[in-house]
Length: 371
Ligand SMILES: [Mg+2]
Image (tube, rainbow, N blue to C red):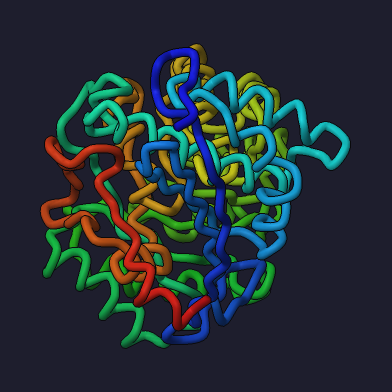
């Protein structure tokens, strides 16, 4: 059995598997439509047989990058030294470019390595990272532009009335901001049905122009929207700042960030009221913690983008956390694919205090149908 310098069993194997899960209804936001979601699952196994699991929602090509560019670095590595392996992976993808597919691949491996380390130590991952809270707030997220009124209302009321989640987010900016009246009608409909006590969030996925985004919020003033995600492109830092200065809702962005410099630029530009980051893209748990520190240095909170089960433990260990996104698409897949999936009833999730690692076990035989 290979033993690492720390005395832990060294990493012996790395596997990446691609799963494709069709959506139950057509889904779209302001700038993209899709009919299925791809998960790339990564499993790292130590010499004693202990396995850590990570994943990302990226292109199938992520699996190829894990196998061709990263597995050789991870095999033989010391599972106690996750930041060292992370650093070696980042350096190895220099010429293929970290933003994009390589960043997703590194993220999935990093999460698998943290899970492995916690399992080897017999600790829940949030205890290994150092917990600052027992429960993690979430908000219901979906409200796709492809839903009709009944589908939209059913979904938000399921969060609010059945699961008692006091925060919901819907997509607006339909068809690159060309259907403003429908956007406004959907905001009004949802506010009307959820009542005044539930926080209403909207996400335009960068669909609007600067003035258009401001006009939408002025026209919706009486609906008390609290969170306006990517009102304009997240590449338009000046535009985000303009919108932020003109409306009462918090302006947020960050889901397409892949490295610390990106998040630092966004924060330094005064572009957001709350920074978002996605551990399945930005570099796993290792980098998400550093992104949270960048936000903290700018007196900002951080919110986890999508894949709530992947963020649950690091969120519990992050002092300046606002919440996680209980994203319909990913919740559906994670609840189906993993034993140990979490319950958002009451508006928060509670990572297990007993189960080692992130507490999730993939149901590989049931997943086979989607491979
Ligand atoms: Mg978004």
